[in-house]
Length: 311
Image 1 (cartoon, rainbow, N blue to C red):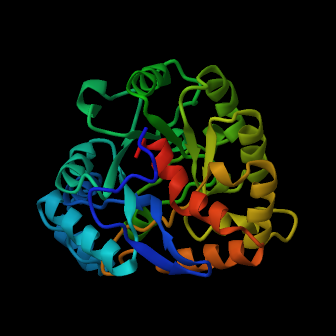
Image 2 (tube, helix red, strand yellow):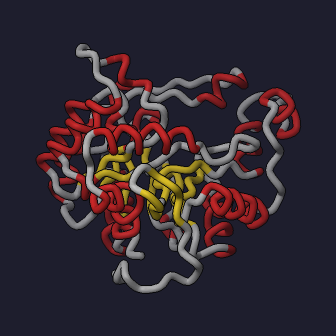
């Protein structure tokens, strides 16, 4: 694992924050490649990649994922963001994030969605993190099929991302694609026995558990190898009985999990919006108002992700 004080392969980029210049590494960026849209289009008759972008009014990604990676690298430069985890957001698109990392190994990490019932670990040798969506694909995180993913992660010193809680994919809704997700498989508590059995694997639960905040905190409290990502607008807060706001969410998370297991993320995805800087502004303001130190801010906004990734 590299010493954080060692010089990087590229000039370190810092974003302005309430604490001053801050190195930011985003743990949650969706890499919407052309292959991703081809896979989406195949799910509905007469839907095409060009038709999708006309309907969404998004910028059509270039055919080559390395070119899209260059676009993202320039966007991160513009926003003052040092590194990002790029997520291939449908099974079968892992080659796109691999190409992006090959083009910019000092800027990106390759994460990819996996359906453990139909994947080949041999094709995932260049992937840093496998992303599991049990509710989307209809299986329990305790299903025996998941064991292959756990073995892959353990053997390669990799991490596993497990989506829990409310699951709503905006692009599917806009395109009228069905979303037959099964929330019976979305409780973070189901991950407890798996994470406890594999303490060497870092497990990442995004969006503070996406509505299962209490359960995500219980899981992370019991399993020191569980990390929570802070990404998205966190609209799940409206499901809570008490009137939580973002500051209170962070206060509870810091009290239970501490600053070393929180991973900043934005849930950025498409152009022309690009990197979702408003998420950073909201989260950094909330943490600063809570009195979080510069050292803890550095951990949350970058160092924790880099440590997990071995950078």
